[in-house]
Amino acid sequence: MRGSSLDQLYAAHLDRLMRRTDRSLEASGFEALVIHAGRAPIQFLDDQDYPFKVNPQFKAWVPITDNPRCILVYSPGNRPTVLFYQPNDFWHKSATLPAAAWTAEVNLVAMDDESKAAAHWAKLGRVAFIGPRCLMPDADPKCINPQGLMALLDYERAVKTPYELECLREASELGARGHAAALAAFNRGGSEYDAHMSYLQACKQREEELPYNNIVAYNENAAVLHYQHLERAAPAPLRSFLIDAGAQYRGYASDITRTHARGGGRFADLVQAMDGAQQTLCSAIIAGRDFCDVHLSAHRILGDVMQQIGLTKLPGQAALECGVTSTFFPHGIGHLLGLQVHDVGGVMADSQGALRERPKGHPFLRLTRMLEPGVVVTVEPGIYLIESLLAAAHADERRSHIDWAVAEELKPFGGVRIEDNVATTQDKPENMTRDAFARVANAETA
Ligand code: GLY
Ligand code: MN
Ligand code: MN
Image (cartoon, rainbow, N blue to C red):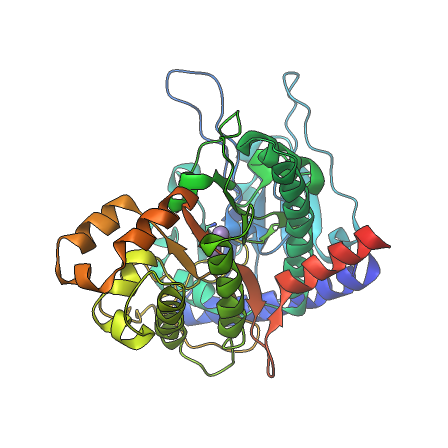
């Protein structure tokens, strides 16, 4: 969906956001809200900036992601005012005032100097400020990122509006295009770097626009969960390719992983088994379900996969109980997704800021909430051959439950992860990523 329908959805999104904010401001004793977009930090002993990453609370209101120092001012009963930073600067090109349809929903005001901003909230009563503290030196410290208000906003942000869902679908589609191009680079023998560059070109995003650094890992590198390098030469032999890469659309993120095997054999069987297991887990993204249960059931299902391919010697439930599954699957099954790749509020129990415990022994799970319609999550099971975790398992009672010859055989392939972005609905889950891959494949064959 593009153009006018997305603009209509935006108007409804903004309306819902304003209603939500009205309630949150009232509950926390504030009369108005000021959100600073942030600015790019300067590098130590240098005059160069780090890439600018906009305050997610700011981009929840307006799709401005690339212009630092903008400020949003909102008071209940009024349309939001966006102070759009346009300095007189002959070193840089000042951003152009947006003219897209969404601007009709806000008061867009050009601001050449930040010192002019405070006049816009001087008469609004008790104002809450959201943003980096150092950018709001004149505000009362108690009113900067106040805990009660932040908890309300963070908690409620997990349930997406129809506009946000549409943005997330578009983000998945951009990612799917990038993944197709990266796979083509891998298939023609290109390096990690080549696959990464093909990805960027296909989704037309520069690195700093991505929601996170691409993970482009060949062979053993796939065992490193957040592998961060890009080798400039392809290894020989080339055995496996794990790519975890997303894209942004109007400030919303996708977070997608695919793993590809070169040739057949046990690793290719593992990738295929993982694909089936991942789809089973996606079908568990149902309103009313506890995400901790989804995570624990992932351990049972992956434990069965490990046994089926010969890596372990006991069924999933028993492998979970004795910690064998965590040796190969050390991270969580998923997390909230939205304005940030790891969206806030994942372990909140309520809008007051209480926390919902992770299951014991699962410290890396980022989402412990109950699922409800509109909540978008990732589903990302993985099985990896990680030296340090294998050594720990070898040193204790888990040793007898693992087939070490199979572990050695799989080590040169690194690992497998498959990750989709899934929206909880009233009914069956919407797999935004698989839908996007299908659209991209159809477009390629059309
Ligand atoms: N790309 C980071 C993650 O999957 O959580
Ligand atoms: Mn990912
Ligand atoms: Mn993820």
